Image (cartoon, rainbow, N blue to C red; front, side, top):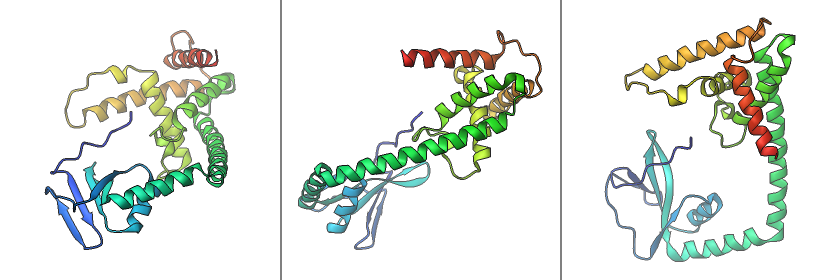
Length: 239
């Protein structure tokens, strides 16, 4: 789920005037006459407006950190830089650079998807008789976790790819093989963590059955059921 930044209020705003070393936190301030607000979104445009003249950077506190939501600057500077930016975006040279950059990102993403899927298969380590199940599970986890912007553990670089693969598998199983998403968890400190831990243990036991080559009833196994749903969804998307 994508988390939205909270709406900015005088209590959550921090205005920074780097040129004059001023910092207004939790106060209502009035920008100079002729200034206009430029929301965050186009990093190149924001950077150029900053370089072009005086400005106030506006931040809001989000998850206990300062997060930029835009800046105030003279309206004529913003208008001029917007015009320059629009012309640049429409130029053939920019479109060529953009296409080349996209191809490079796509190649990098494809390489990472292959590496991540291999790490998932290594973590699963299913017995030969269940290799087909391992392949399907690796596909499902990779498809869910790897896309840019997914917000999953697979996108973090703070832990190794092996740890990412393990965490992604367990998270996928928690959401797909249990009723975790529909649970009503008491608002008690540590309760949700405890529930996740119990579900994770159940998921690891299911994985152990496949690793050891045990006979697993595919009609009742929660993992098998989840993979059948995944297969049906893939079929619908390909129609």
